[in-house]
Amino acid sequence: MYWQPEIETLPRPELESLQLQRLRGLVERLAATVPAYRAKLTHAGVSAADLHSLDDARRLPFTANADLHEHYPDGFLAIPRAQVARLHTSSGTTGKPKALFFSRQDVDQAAELIARCLLMTGCVAGDVLQNMMTYGLFTGALVMHYGAEKAGLLVIPAGPGNSERQLLLMRDFRTTVFHTTPTYALYLADVVEKQGLDPRQDLALRKGFIGAEAHSEETRAKIESAFGIEAYNSYGLSEMNGPGVAFECVHKQGMHVWEDQYLLEIVDPVTGEPLPEGTAGELVLTTLNREAMPLLRYRTRDITRVLPGPCACGRTHRRIARITGRTDDMLVVRGVNIYPQQIERVLMGITELGRNYLILLQGLDDMIVKVELSPANFDGQVDRLVKLQNRVTERLRAETQVRPRVELVAPGSLPVSEGKAKRVLDQRTL
Ligand code: ADP
Ligand code: ZN
Image (cartoon, rainbow, N blue to C red; front, top):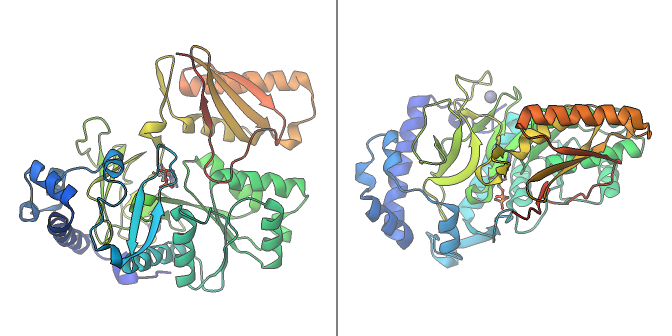
């Protein structure tokens, strides 16, 4: 099922010429309306007339996180203040927040993209979506909310936390889809287990939209089996509207990026040079159709690659692989580069382990990994635990090249956050 079939299946040559036309219009408009971009474009010596093909996009200046801070609060606003309909901020996982403005048309366009995503996963009018993301300045909840309403779903604006109430709502209103972070999905799975619920019998859930945080296939598998659902990876960032930038279709082989709205590039995170198609690097996105705050070549810092070939669903918009990490998430432990997601993948692949973990960096350069046991394995049998502990240590060493100290802890004993999880505590005295 398609929401906008003509656009979603637009043949690539037409899609690309639409992109080029939009890109030219965008550059022209930015030069005229946003002094910060006028300066950047002048400095790069490039104007709309220089864009003869999409390859020429590489001549355009990047926009970095630091630019948004420098021009905070409204230096990148491209329309008069009186035409702004909504303000969001980024959740500020890294540093102070960034302000993001939406015109009325931007609000509507973001909702259209979500509607495309929902139909792409097989949602239909009549589905009940329980939105467990944080409502407020964060884009995650509101953008999904508007899109799901547009697609004809019944939306329950539950917000995060209060798991007992979440389950009550799910039961009483026959929720068929939930939208949440991987962290909260795993936490809720524990609560379901503790309450002795059988989601396949007691709940009407069929799908989960899992986003806002990097997570592995192993985590997806855990979420799917705990709830008896299909879980779809949902990628977005506030700077690009929030959710709805890239989403999996029913085939779950990478996330389609809506290329009529976003120009997608993969660059070398160090040099900024474009990489050959299929090579992993930093995702760079340009908003092609946004009014209030268009961004040129925004450095997302997220690492991914473009997947080859067309998708069986018939959509022509290219797919990106699961995000493997964020350039600024990388840890350097004893001179070795480690992404927290490598650790997550190992832990979530070991069935005796539970669903929550914490990475502590302490002392001179020690890595301690605390991980909860699964409730079924928490019977205090020390011998078995020593074996398990050794196995976890060895797997982590093989994956990261650093031998951590592994501590197995009781189910439910590690802190849980309502929004994005804080998985790494760096307390090193280096
Ligand atoms: P902040 O940058 O402050 O965390 P956002 O809420 O805009 O604010 O978060 C966007 C970031 O969240 C993305 O750049 C990416 O790192 C991460 N993210 C969002 N969705 C996913 C996903 N499905 N997989 C991996 N990472 C994701
Ligand atoms: Zn597809």
